[in-house]
Structures are given as structure tokens and as C-alpha cells.
Amino acid sequence: MSRSRLRLLLMSTPVGPLGSGLGGGVELRLLNLSQELRRRGHGVTVVAPAGSVLADVPVVGIPGQPQPTAHTRDRSDPMVLPPNSVLGNMWDYGRQHQGQFDLIVNFAYDWLPFYLTSFFKTPVAHFVTMGSLSDALDDAVQQVADRFPGRLGASTRAQVETFGCGDAFTLLSSAINLDRYQFCPTPGEALAWSGRISPEKGLEDALAAAEIAQVPLKILGKLEDEAYWQHLCQRFPQAEASYLGFLSTHDLQTVLGQCRALVMTHRWVEAFGNVAIEALACRVPVITYDRGGPAEIVQPGSTGWLVPPDDVAALAAAIQRIDDLDRSACRRQAEAEYSLPALGDRFEAWFNRILHRS
Ligand code: UDP
Image 1: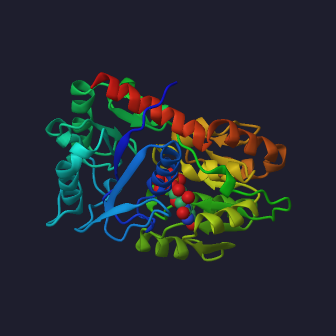
Image 2 (image 1 turned 180 degrees about the vertical axis):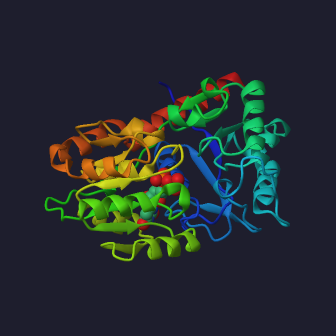
């Protein structure tokens, strides 16, 4: 395919600065995508809340108050914008500078950018980062689907099926820089659990399953909900579990690589689950619920086990069968499906289709 150099404006999540961990998988996704697109010669500008850090990728930092996260609100809640909203300020930057770009790509899971699509002269594409959580946002997504065909992107089939217009999305999956994830030939006995510590991630099920299976659990990730964490500490006082904090990718992969498996226990329809492919890249199999994105990643019996959602006993039983899995198949799958060049190809093709239509 012949390639033209695109000038791309990537609009980050407004829930917190990049590097804080509050943005979850969006942070690593923006980093990987930006680096891959720049490697291909595209011009990439990232706009994000002030204080953001994105390795060697330049970021335009915008001041203002963060948005509340969609997963901490009820489906029928009206949309909110705090005074001096960073989301509003970011999109004002986009409005003022749009003439310098061929395409604007929104990564905010929020109503405003969808609503603003028709007010921009430069085409706006939307990469949707979670499943359906809000009636008002669903409505705004549907309007983009109707008025701007081709502009919606997302990670997995399970994710887009939570919206009323699944066929309107381009599926783009996810990817990581595989060179940053190493193999540890001598993993220990512990299991890993990795992610934001927040109720929709269901850490209690991993603690319970590890207790039944009598294996230690290493917990890695952003402590997003302190009250929830305190509740877990009281509920599992005897758990052989250690919380290691929110780790850099380098330290994360070192700890992950030393574990026998990653356990993912999400209660919601996880849009993708970047931690799953990070584990696979370290040759660590994934034991998870047959729900959402992780169920589209794991190859049962080879790179992990899928068990019925919310079934802790089944999780514990699957933990006993880790040795039936194939650690080298995990890395092979990561290389075949989740490399940065594969991600770059998918996004470039999506961008070119949008620009061709516009
Ligand atoms: N993560 C991290 N340090 C940690 C644990 C997790 O940087 O100690 C990152 C991980 O690399 C992944 C993100 O947190 O990119 C979690 O993303 P995921 O897609 O699994 O879930 P989300 O938070 O987007 O729902």
C-alpha cells in the first residue's frame, strides 16, 4: 500500500495526566500507537492534561479540572463538566489548531468529543476505549455512527456489541512493544493480578481463588479506589497476597515474568485487557472469565483457560491446570497478533479509509 505522511492530532483521555495510571490501558495504547505512527513517518501531536508524560513523544499539556470517570457513574446519570474543564480546554485547543492536521483522533470516553464531531472542519475519528456504560454517551456514539460512517474504532467484538450499533465500528484490537517484555525461564509459584484496583476489575475473585488454590498472589496496578482496597484487606486478612504498587512497564514485566499465570477477574465487559497481552509477551498464560475482550484473546488449553464468569471455584480449578498450558505458545501468539507493526497497519488502514471518505 502506498503511504502518505499524515498529520495526526491524538486527543488523550481527560480523566488524569498520562503517566498517572488513571487512564488505564489508554496510556500504554497512546504511547505505543504514537511511537509506531512516528516510526512510519507520520506527524503525531498528542494533547493531554497538564503534567502528562509519554516517554519520547511530545505532549501538549492542557490545564484544567479532570473529568469524572465513566465507570464510577450510573448509566442514567447526566453528563457533567467541572468548571475550567480540561476536556473542554483540550477540545478548544483542537478547534483552534485543527487546520494544521489531516485527522483528529479522540481517545476520551466522554460525550463532548462525540457531540463536537460535526462542528469540526477537520475529520474527527473516535477510538472508543470501553463498552457501553452511559445512556447519554451511547446516544452520542449512535449519532456519529449515523452521520459519519467509518469514524468509530474499538478493540473487540464483545466490546462493540454492548453498543446498539456494533457493525458501525472498525475493530482495531491492541498491541504492545514486544521487545520490552522478557522471558523468565524459572517462574516462581505465585500468580499475578494486574490492573486498576477498582470494583469493576473484581480483585476479590482473584484473592478468593488464590486462597482456595493455596498459591500466593502478586497484585500490581494503580490503586484507584482506596475504600474498595481497604474493604478487600479486611475481607481477606489471611490472604497470601502482596501489593507491589503501580509499576513501570519494565518492572511490571519483570514481576509478571516470574509468575506462573496472570489471573483476570473483571466483572464488566472488559473492552480489551492490555494486561493479558503483556502477560502473553512474557510467556505467562492467562486464566480468566469467558467474558469481554480477554475471552477473544485467550486460546483455551494453549495460552490460558477461560472459565464461566464470576465462578471462583472454576478459577481455582483452572489454576490447578496451569501446567497443561504452553508458555512458548503464549509468546508466539503475542508476536503473531499483538505486535506494533500489526497495530500500525490496522490504524493506518482505518485512517486512510476515513480520509478517503472525507
Ligand atoms: N499497568 C501498569 N503498571 C502496573 C499495572 C498495570 O502500568 O503496575 C498498566 C498496564 O500496562 C496496562 C494498564 O495498566 O496498560 C491496564 O490496562 P487494561 O487494558 O488491562 O485495563 P483498563 O485499565 O484500561 O480497564
